[in-house]
Structure formats: C-alpha cells, structure tokens
Length: 116
Image 1 (tube, rainbow, N blue to C red):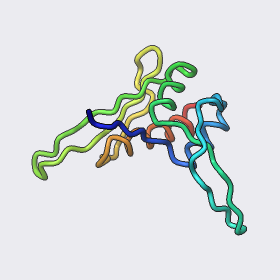
Image 2: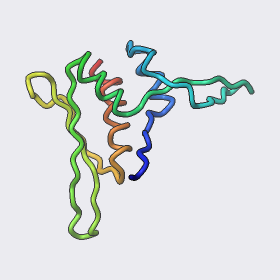
Image 3: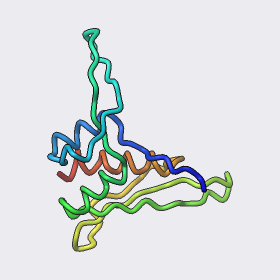
Image 4: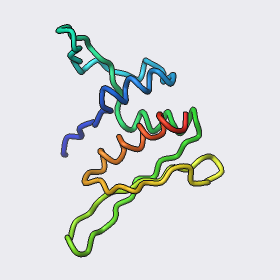
C-alpha cells in the first residue's frame, strides 16, 4: 500500500490562519522560520485539508479545485472557485496552476485575505 504524505500550508498562510482565529490544536510544529534579525523561531502549520475544512465549517466557504485539460500542450492544470453557503460564487480563479496543492494553497490564501 502506498504511503500517503500530507501537504501543509505555507508559513505565511499558517500565520494568516492563526490571525483569523483557526484553532491552534490543528497546527503542528515543523517549520523553522528565519527572521531578518539573525534569529529563528518554530512556526506551527496545518495541512491544506484541515485549513479547507476550517473554512467550510466555521465560515461556510466551500472551495472547488478542478482540473482543466490543455489540448494544445497536452497538460492538465488546476483552477478554483469559491462558493458561499447559498452556492453563490464568491471567488473565481483566473490563473492556471500546475499542481493541485498549489491551487489549494492559493485558494486558502485568497479566502483569508479577501473573504474573512
């Protein structure tokens, strides 16, 4: 059976999540952040899925990451849409992402900066 690895939010997104009130018990210590003054500190982060679940359960923000196929280049890219509890679109992607996880991170960050 293949081993599943978890993808974590970036340090910047983790800090935004904490600022917006995400429960700290969801976070794990794993990143060392280097400060500009020569010091460093441990930064706690959560998985992408935990952040998406928190947005859904606490703020009624629903994230949809969808693949799109580029027939010319024969590649798959990912785009996103964000819905509220009435299923109205409250955010729409205009960028194509090469990886699903990068699209998730960008969408979470968009929600934190623009919707909460």
